[in-house]
Length: 369
Ligand SMILES: Cc1cc2nc3c(=O)[nH]c(=O)nc-3n(C[C@H](O)[C@H](O)[C@H](O)COP(=O)(O)O)c2cc1C
Image 1: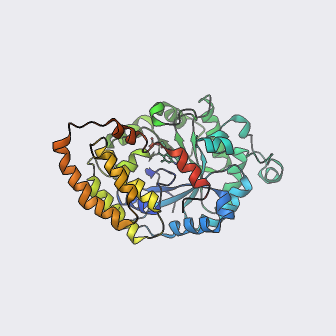
Image 2: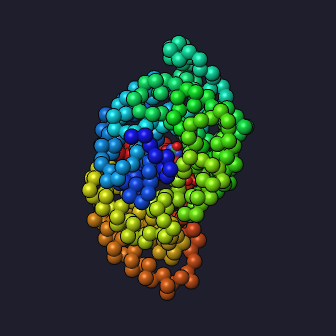
Image 3: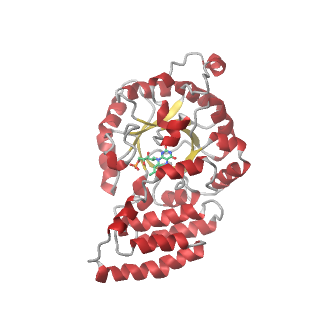
């Protein structure tokens, strides 16, 4: 099935588990990405491979495309790893956008966007053996190898190059080397967090206006509310939209303008987790629940209590009890105690979605199973 790129659930480390992907598909996502997976671990860590194959074998109730995202900088490893999962997905994406320290240290993700890493590709057969250079990927070369080696389409997800005017040139080369579509998160590698500035959607518009680029462009960044979807598409002219952080709080954003009740949507997610035991870790589930609740109830007097109570849960029954009994009671209590303000509550919220660094290091060390 060729992926329908209209509404895409973004790859998010420790948060793109199958139950969450299925939930977003139920509410309008047409394509869902896995978190970035480590080629090295897929090849060398049997438990990691089995965990992610189990996740990919789970069945969606709606026709939705699943894209597996790989990171890394070793073309041969990426291909060997991709071959281990390509039978279970509709496309394989190469992560060229990760800005975190772990990507800088390992020289992958957005740190491959420098021009020295994307030489011209003219003779792919020859390049496969000769252009592989000191363990450093030659970007366009790797995408060529992927496109030639995999039986599913290959895509790329990138941030802006520096200077950003180089982005169009890179995108054209990626198309020439076989990328079936390009997702542009219109921030540079230096703006790592949302709070460090909005994505520059004019860059996506510029990319879309390139006369030589013919593959679809997916716009990523700045969608916070339902109306942003149409505005973003209209402004950028993109062929599809990818949403990350906002989807964590509101997994229904693609389907309508009404926020789901945070407890109801948490219970719905929990039910999917029960149907597919062993594909989301307890930590992943706890983090999802926190996002669902925090999105609408952040900075409540009971925010700290919620966090502590959630962390103390040892299984899904505990979480369900917390949702059905305690949180509902606290929500009822907020009317009387809304004058309380607690600076620590704000601190808790700030530590929420943004703490990706630890999650990524943890995941890439193979500890997320
Ligand atoms: C918790 C979290 C984990 C992420 N993990 C990945 C990842 O594994 N691969 C990737 O390409 N981007 C990752 N991202 C970036 C998102 O896919 C997306 O590009 C970014 O959040 C901007 O989109 P947004 O403004 O809709 O959130 C992550 C973002 C978040 C918030």
